[in-house]
Length: 333
Ligand code: AQP
Image (tube, helix red, strand yellow):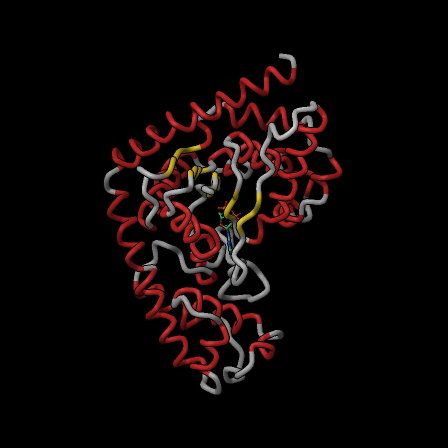
């Protein structure tokens, strides 16, 4: 049976290899399966949980759409739109925030990481972010949500909210309880500068990530400067346990070559990192650089990108408005 897919990406600039391998690459294969119905959302309401410059945000929304298209998502097969245009998202987020419990949100590790030491100064939106994410998913009766490993906890919260609503209002199966689709291997791509930190848009050092808009020289330079250790490549995967940087680079290479880490290790065992890094750069140039060229081409045609968004809006709004009307009835509004 086909799946109903929903996922979102924040238009916060610097879309990177982690976003691609952890999420967008998966979106493309789900989009290519004709049995699936896919909704891919540019989650701009999520982006404003931290301060955004309006001009940059506008550009980043278009760049996220361009990245979807350049990666291979077909707007004829999938709905692509931006969240802020469909009012049902904000409305459902409010309603669900009256269902979610403080104790549940207090456990969310992403808030703790992003708010840092000064929680008092974090926006309320940053705290309630997972409730908006639950609204996004539940409005479309989504059965499956492809995300990176960092979003697993938020998805569990979404499942709890759906179940509590269904039980509390005695409406069995009204909200579909969605399943996460998280890749088994390499579900979290780590920073090129620190194998214990995830690759992230907001990391200040550009050398920590491969951006999907990087050119060939930038890719070569970043891979060359990526942190490794002085030991040669091991022969056994177990020997990677205390070598997070090596594990990350080998994982990236294996994913991009549709191989697995064991096979890659058998190719490079005993060798030093220099040769491996040269080949990793080549693979990245082969797989990521064409996306970079296409993104830049698409960004020259903002009318086209805006048309994709407005056509997607029409379809998304219809589905979400229908669901919100049913929610009103259930609540007694
Ligand atoms: N390093 C990663 N490895 C695997 N998957 C990742 N994702 C993000 N980083 C990695 C996945 O990409 C999708 C879109 O993410 P997002 O833009 O909505 O937000 P995020 O997870 O907060 O991304 P960043 O890059 O880490 O942004 P900042 O720096 O702003 O926090 C999601 O499915 C996510 O799991």
